[in-house]
Amino acid sequence: MADSWVIMVTAQTPTNIAVIKYWGKRDEKLILPVNDSISVTLDPAHLCTTTTVAVSPSFAQDRMWLNGKEISLSGGRYQNCLREIRARACDVEDKERGIKISKKDWEKLHVHIASYNNFPTAAGLASSAAGFACLVFALAKLMNAKEDNSELSAIARQGSGSACRSLFGGFVKWKMGKVEDGSDSLAVQVVDEKHWDDLVIIIAVVSSRQKETSSTTGMRETVETSLLLQHRAKEIVPKRIVQMEESIKNRNFASFAHLTCADSNQFHAVCMDTCPPIFYMNDTSHRIISCVEKWNRSVGTPQVAYTFDAGPNAVLIAHNRKAAAQLLQKLLFYFPPNSDTELNSYVLGDKSILKDAG
Ligand code: ADP
Ligand code: DP6
Ligand code: CO
Image (cartoon, rainbow, N blue to C red; front, side, top):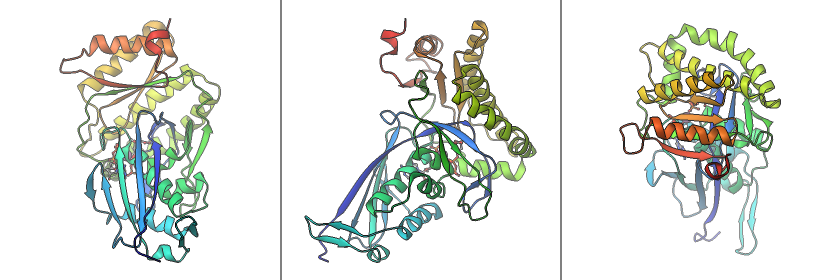
């Protein structure tokens, strides 16, 4: 092989936000969770990761750049993903350029990886989910791995737990699995993105600052110190998973909203039950919750569900376009532009809600 060639693959993967949260591992190394979780995959046009992976005989080592800055690949998570995909690499041939890479060559070849998030990194909007899903997907394409998305999800899981759910669109369940080697801890699609396309998701960015406690550290401390987590994982979540799947399949928004808000609140309660307590939400997050709760109560039936990941930013899921338009009006009124609590919003699902919502 001449040393001059480079083969590149670019992939784009959306992030996902859990409506029944994953928080706590039973195996840190394999990233196996203490409970099942369910998420909605967001519209890739708004929040996504774009990753380019390149291979060349002239590369002396594996290297990675995240948002333009070189990062170390020495952490176990990146190594796990690289190792697992390399083990599944197949022959690659580019006839036009006369390049042939055999299965065995992949053991010696090195890759360069450049990844960009078009939304805040490490701020509680699941950058690790989009990031590792995209990395695994791009590497699998480059190395011609034949695994399907469920099998790839079990590899992405070893980069970041939530990443396994970003290999599918729509609503996705991460089954915690039973076996020790983690091979059955993977993602399955509950319904595709067309099933419930009335929903409009609005992300209100309260702060794009990097969180003080990463999800990994936070959940480790919770597992070590919170009794509430054990009750949640064993008694509460299994029932909620069944109810949530039902609500999604039947497009029952009242039940969906009730479960989503309750699970977000319980997740943050579990963070408070950690020693020392972890605070991911701030005053603005709490005000958003109050605003939605008051509105839902005044109407009688829920119009909007809220959920917050490990950060202060709100993910608001509106029942339909009319509810989304009303929600945007309320957000603008209570959190006015150019004030201390100004929100930067991404509206996902329908670009024309303000014009069309009657
Ligand atoms: P978030 O709430 O954004 O998921 P986490 O604390 O879970 O925050 O994870 C943030 C970490 O995920 C980053 O420090 C980085 O290690 C990793 N990450 C973020 N984006 C990417 C990406 N595009 N590719 C690979 N890894 C990423
Ligand atoms: C609150 O997947 O980021 O977003 O597996 O340690 O990388 P690691 O953690 P991560 O945790 C996500 C936690 C959450 C809830 C969720 O996405 O289910
Ligand atoms: Co994360």
